[in-house]
Length: 233
Image (cartoon, rainbow, N blue to C red; front, side, top):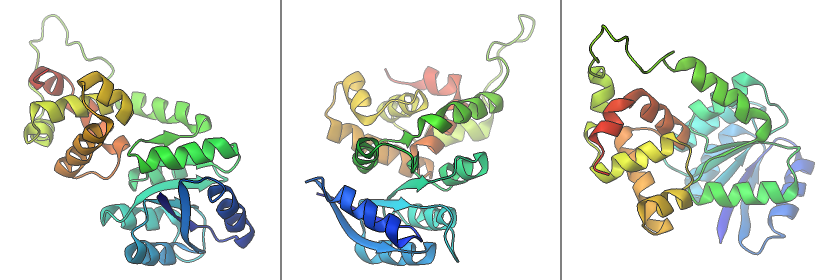
């Protein structure tokens, strides 16, 4: 049973979400709240598997609440909002949200997203995926191939240090996260069970000191050739 905490300041929206989620045999709504501060408080008390989090709420907003929940490891957070503004998307993912979905999503898409986030995967609304990819591409170096007259440079010490404590298998997992693979795809690629892949992902996040797969993917991108060159695969 996947235990879900609802955080939205509109009672009618919460009622609709509760009805939808509890129509599925494997989902249970353990509580519902109307603001971010209450979401953090109830997450501490109940330790749900997933917090379904709105962005705009009175008092403590959803992004601030997401940062608090993920920093304490209380639950996975799936942001569900009306807004696909870039600031909200980057803010939520930077705060450690495992997913970002719009309220215009079809019911089956929402149910699937909750299950995937509970299983340790990341979810992005199709409407924002392209913009996230563009943002990552813009932040990446223009070319990974040095000029012919310039010898390849060693990775910056800070980037090397981020992955130095990972085992060869964990570096393989991090590289897979950098390519956007799900837990099931990682399991298939590494010839392990889905449960083992999920455990590896959790350990990688913990060792890197990050709270989401998106943040781990950024570390993988920064590590670049050092990560690939040091892998035991």
